[in-house]
Length: 142
Image 1 (tube, rainbow, N blue to C red):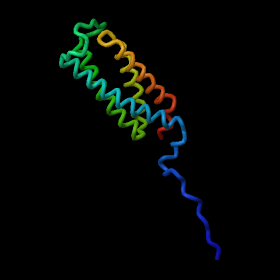
Image 2: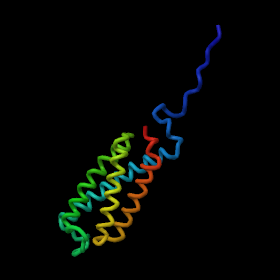
Image 3: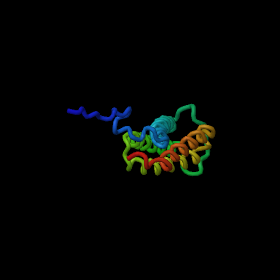
Image 4: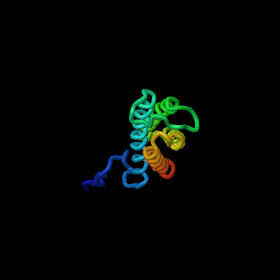
């Protein structure tokens, strides 16, 4: 009686079939960036609403006031945290919502540039990187 040999077990579990694909890393990177940007927007939004001293004292905004932009930062931060968790668990709907939220966040950062210019440009650049990850490689989430 011949002994039937089974193929060697894969180094990766079946759910990790995309781990060798470089696009998979971009999507996970975008998810982590969403969490970081969300936390930072939440912190800065709370600081703006609470009249913290590390934000410029009298910035001139195109639209609204410091308190209005603080609340916008809080709402964007909460949305980015939720979407970031969704992207990390590979939810396709979170990818599309993440694209919208990141685009709105990038626009908001440019509109808040008068209160902290370098910081706004840095967060804008991170938003663009996360957008690239979700748009160019987001089909690798399924």
